[in-house]
Length: 119
Image (cartoon, rainbow, N blue to C red; front, top):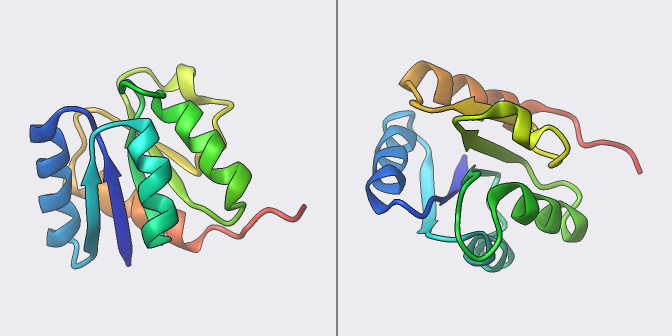
C-alpha cells in the first residue's frame, strides 16, 4: 500500500512514517500542511492519506474535502485529538492521538478495503 502522510510536526510525520513502514507499506511523501497534502495527492495518487487535523495552510478536514472533491475514490484517515471536529470531512476513519501500531494497521486496512461510495 502506498501512503501519503501530512503533519505539520516533523517528528510526528517521521514517527507515522516509521510505523507505516513497520506495517510493510510504502511512504510516498511526508508533507507539512493541508495545501501540500492536496498537491502531493495529485503527484502520487496514494492508496491512503494519513492527515493531521490541525495544520497550517488548510486544516486536515478542509484538505480532505478538497482531495475527495477532485478524487472521489481517495481514502483519507484523519489523525486528531478531537474526533468530533472531523465528522463531516469525508475521511474514511479517524485515529486518535497518540496512535499505536495496532490502531494504524487497522485504520490502513479499513481504509484500503472500504468500498468507494457511489455517486
